Length: 628
Image (cartoon, rainbow, N blue to C red):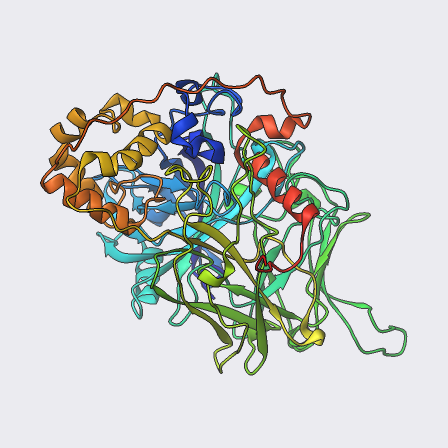
């Protein structure tokens, strides 16, 4: 049951996501035309968007436990868990938030996060390592089209658990017992109200509200095996997802033993404005769509399961922080039976509606973001379920799909790096049948994509490797239903890299220089494009480049350098030969480009990425085909 469990806590506060925006634009990856102005605040056509000096830090700020539940009952006020803060690491640097690729910015991942529960004295009662995860189900929660209007959810697990003195908390003792079988906890949090105003004290901060509960054996890390409510986008929408029924995708879990249904509305209900109260959609009524006609009740009638009053979720400004949007509905035996194999629906005022697919079927990959090197094998678990239970023995189709990627080049719109090609580099199985556990496996041994995203013929500058999208769907028409456009598997496949020997600075200079260009905050410590400074800091760089990617101190901070290049850098740092002099290029003068007509392109961030994705969808929302 994951975080939707009778034993769970909720927490609320703020987050810091101090990402650098220089690498948001693919055109900035061209060393030959990179200008120093690209590292300054401003529009990407001449500058580096809204936060070029970001250091990629991700932090939890002022988060506190707002409520806790044990076996369906509110935890007593004297339990010390209710006085706990939810913090990140106290003995190492902050976690990092990074995009997969400049042409896939809609699966930003958190790396190296440590989550702690600390009592009123600052003593750690629980410490866990957060498994890297990407956000999902991003949508327009508030009015507007910039990032401040968006909301998204992160779901993952905490491992390597360390427990402190729990004598003052019966709740934490019970949570520890439930986590013991696999030493793991489930965590889910929603992020919204991201501030892009550099003059504000909350710049690069936003609101964070979440839940922690046990993760039972064999549960996936990043999704719920349960019921999934599907939304549809507003026709003609050119920004973040705007559900027609005003309620975003959301999951639920039915507990037949406790006779209740847990519904997670944390990333589903709109707000009246950024960081404001939840919007009044009327009383929200949960029910089952009855497929069988009975006297006085035609087929399609609603069998009521419960209601959430508008006065509760919209009238109480503390409700969202206290509950993280989790609602529990008690069910009787008849309601449990009705909900077992018929679609659930949630309705409110006029036009407010969301429900399960008519078939009750749903699927998603658990780990849907992958970074791969040529020759590497990967097996990706795609979970299929129906009516909240694993769905065995059905065929799942896999097709390449670039419709969710975001190719662009604001610097030179005539030289946009292509995505999804060559397709032959990712030879995956076109279909698979789910096993008894409801899992279908997407498998491949990837090849070398070459350098399809280098700029100009014969150059050595560009975006390493290639980014791909693969969409999973049910083969049987009767299981197909509404499609979540963000539900696809994203793959960054690095180019093969075998440098000439002996390794010299000349060979590796383009790599170092690109890093210096795209991550200008490093210039406060050393110029990664300067031989003397790199050599002087060789020992520190060897440590940083040698760390595992999930270490918060790992370089590159952006996680977009292939293992082969990192190994070459480490080998060179052991004996840093300079090589022949490097011909210094004069920075190219930028052309006088006219600002795009669409203001969303000027805002940067995820809003810009969404605009790029929609352009791709307009060009082709069909399956990717290998060019002849």
